[in-house]
Structures are given as structure tokens and as C-alpha cells.
Image (cartoon, rainbow, N blue to C red; front, top):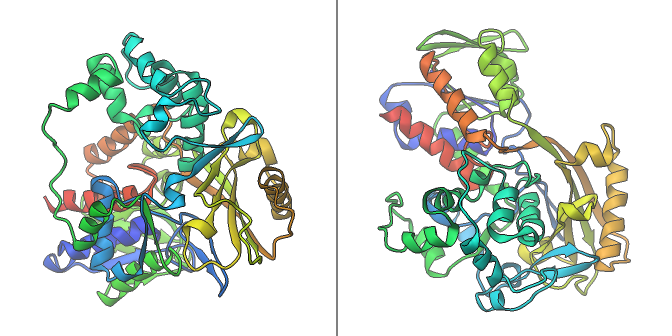
Length: 472
């Protein structure tokens, strides 16, 4: 028997790939998926009414790269192609992305032509950032923060007003702490190998493409041909994990909800005992853990305290989510994806997504305000009330977007320790964790956002990678 811990997208995807690669059937294994709560889907959760959808977590998916195309392959295989709603390059949500700085909203550059124009809040055209990179000497480092790297290569303004808010939007984190390898691994390697980003980029043009060979579905090819920027799923993004959940059930995966594991006991290289809080013991041959690293740490700490400590050293942040619906016939916003707020502005909010622009079938104006992240405790303390977050969100919306109407509906949610932070040294730490598991010959595989990327595509690809390793 094999067991998957966690019914979020990582755990569901692990079950999908175990089935698709016939690991279960070929080995006559029975597969369990154990979820501590009463539903599967993790942080992907959609609140739906006839007038609006409130997304509690992600709302769009990027189709770019091997990991993005891999997700589209899965989506087609699950029969969801007809539910996909792409945002193409000419859509306002693709073209118009903003930051709020110096008391104004600023449209970020979105074309090559804009690189040669001065666009506030930047004091000079962005082409000068590339010239700065060419002039900078090389600096040999094992790792660095993405903020330091960008400041060194492209200047402080780019670090403050482009990269820092982008990190807030992706992982609610502080660019001064996040590893450059999280988002700019290739650029960092160019600096370390060739002495600069521009030099590395030029040399890369003459090297053959070494991307993994991936057979593309019709949906994946269509995304390339039409150059999708992002896409979503009509009816709410939680249709995706729900469909995965149903696929697993239809293929005889035993999904146990409200099953909280209290301890993992490794008996030998092929035997693991899972003890739940009800006192039941389940013996399996292998465990796939998709739960957060800090949760897994608690389960293995008795037998493997060193492993537990390394798992606990992966930090997580808490994010406040305030969804707002305004029942007005006329839109209250300029069409755009939304805006982010640079940390240098010292704002209580990270940014705002214009959901009524990027999610279909919304009536009125729908906004999602994100708060806190790396600064949640600093801004709001340990016992903040949801009413406080709501008041702050409405106040900021009124100030920045000049929306004076009262929301007709709203929802506030605090997502505790929801996003891992890939701080400097993260990848070396994950390598150490997996090396420990290998050296001790522990029958466990690690998947999910704690280790191999925080985005939807990364989580799915992490599951695929770990399952395929078990095939060889």
C-alpha cells in the first residue's frame, strides 16, 4: 500500500501521476489519500454566487514553460479544456499591470518600445538598467537575495519598484530575503558564469535549446499559438482540484477526509506506520507527503529530529484575503489585472486583484485585497480580527481607487502559514533534506510547494517529478 498525505493540489496530482504511470496497478498497490480537513483542494477555494466568484487563493494559471504546458496537458486529460478561459496578450488584464507608489498608480512597462521611455516611478528609461548591468563587475556568490542581485545588476529603482512588488504578488514575501534562484536562477547563473546578465543572454542565443522534450496536448499547443498570458477556469478555479479528486475516486483511490496523522513511524525501508489522532494505525510501503514542511516536521520529529529541524527551517507567511463585491451597473475600475504595492511604501496591503476584469461571468465590480504576508504580524499582531482587515481593505480601496460605494458583499479569510518562503539557501536546504531521506533509506517522497516552487504549475510538476523518480 501507498499513502499520500494531504489533499491539496500536490497530493491530488501525486495520485493522478501514480495512476497514469500505472505504479499502483503494476505493483498491485492500494492507494490511500489522507486529508486532515473535510475537503480536498488546499488553498484553492472558490466562493460562488450567481453574481460573483470570490477566489480564496490563486485565480489564474500561467501557461509558460515546461511546467505550464505540463499543467495544460493534465487539464485536457481531465476533460476540462472547454472550461478554460484564456487571457490573451491584447486583453487589459495582460497589458495593464500596475504598482501603487508615491501616492499614485503607475502602469508598468509591457512592451519593448516602453523600455526606451521614462515611465514613473522610474527616473529614467529602463534601457539604462541594461547598461548598468554591462558596466557592473562580476561578484562570485553561492546564493544571494533577489533584491541584492537586481540592485547590483540593474539598479535600486528596479529592485524597489519592479522586483519587490512582484515578489509580494507571487509569494507575499520580502525580496531582500528571497533567494535569487526562486525567480531568476538563469540570470544569476549568467552573472556567475559570464560576468553579467546581458553577456550571458547574448551567449545563450548561440546555444541549443536544452528544454525537456514534452509531448504537447492540443490545449497546450493552442496556448502557444495564441500566446496566452494566463488562463482561468469558468465557474471557479476549484473545479480543477475537484475534478482531480473525482478522477482519483473513480480509479479506486481511498480518500479519507478528516483524518489527521499524528506521527509517522519508519519501520524499515519498505514499511511505514501512520498513526492518526483517533489511535488508528495504517501500515503502508511508501508515503508521499504533500503537507507543509512544518506539519511533516511534527510527524517525524520523534525518530528523526535532525530532519524535523531542517523541515521547520523553511519559513511560511500568513496572508489576509478580503474579497469585495460592488453591485453597480458601471465598473468602478479601469480594466487591468490589478496593482501591487512595493514594500518601500510601508502599506498594510500587498496589492489588489481586479477579479471582475480577469475572471469571467462577474456582475458588478469584484476585487480581492491581499494583506500582510511577510509583514502580517508586524502590521496586525497575533490576534487581528477579520473586521479589522475588512476595514483596512475598504479604506485602502477608497483611498487608492476612489471607490466610495459600500461593498454589497464581502468575505474575509486569514490563510495561516499558507506560503513557504524560499529564502537564501532554500535549495541547498531542500537538497540536504532529500539527501538525508536517501541516506537513511526512508520510504517517503516530498512533493508540493514547500520544496520545488510555490505556483500551481510547480506543485503539479513536483508531483510528476517525484512519481517518475519512483518509476526508475
